[in-house]
Image (cartoon, rainbow, N blue to C red; front, side, top):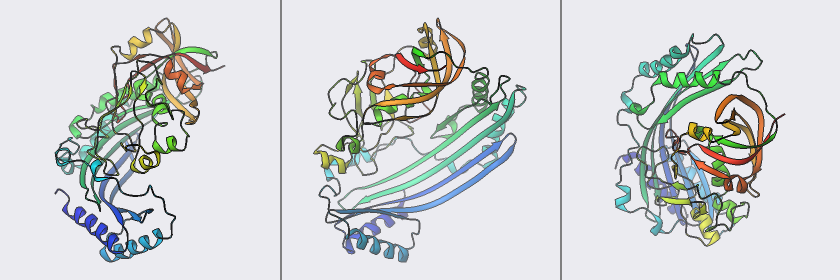
Length: 442
């Protein structure tokens, strides 16, 4: 038992809720500590430290359901809090689908004993000077390298989170995870007008796994200066390469349509598509909660459902939705999980540069700007910036353009998947090459 005090609080809260009249209850208790530092040029602009404990309790009173949270964990306060919560829940309408998951969906002891290496034991020993030093290294690597630089902003963030989840029907699980992030952002003057900006960074579980701060800074500067001279090109239908760090945007047109709520309410263009082709055979998407040091790795989800590796899309065929306990009952389907963990892909054998060389005339998209997506129809529209490509060579930067279309057509026209997963993300997207994408420009 790693978090004895948290466990005791969660178990007590569940027992007291039952004593007050709840038929079932779930209590989650967490303890979080984080530090956020922002340097603008060489001066500290923001310094924020947070220490917080909280309790969230889900109550089931004869199929009446409510959820409540508090940061006041004193026993007397919790008693009053839980008593009032149970009273309020009894006024709600019944919903036969509201009950805890069947115990068969909880993780077994072997799964709960697995070590996913999510917690850096040296977290508390990293001193403040070292953290500031990472930011100063990034700034010093950029400062003075171009007379077009306006500002350099560098960011450091770390956190440690401990949590316990207890269900009244027998589940109990604990989590401990750490995280570190560094990021550099640069803004510059464009002689043709405008003030382009760009950044680069990484997020990891262990301090030792952070990228070299000078490497991050130089990449941020390179991205920013590469945007100088941006312009529109003629509207048309082009091939499109999407850089790995931005490829989560088009992937979202699939993942956002897979939730149980959207399926049950028929607000998803993928409703009824299990076992059917929804994309080019080049696309394979896997939800893998067991990635060591993964940013979304887990042994169980927020409902206590056992983690499982699932192939969401296999060579273009849709295999699985994200179905939580409640919508599983509504849909008469086996629950899997209501949220994604690490998303990995069936990667190809070409780098992003090799994908670019395959384009006779097209656009390399490096950023998506705003936009919208309709989960019911699959229609989307996004602003983009990036580079115009001709005969396999990058010619000049582009911006103030839009892409639009339907997710079904977009993914049917997927030509290639890159070999370059974005490992500093829970969504480990590669670069993608698409055919026949509608661009609006001048």
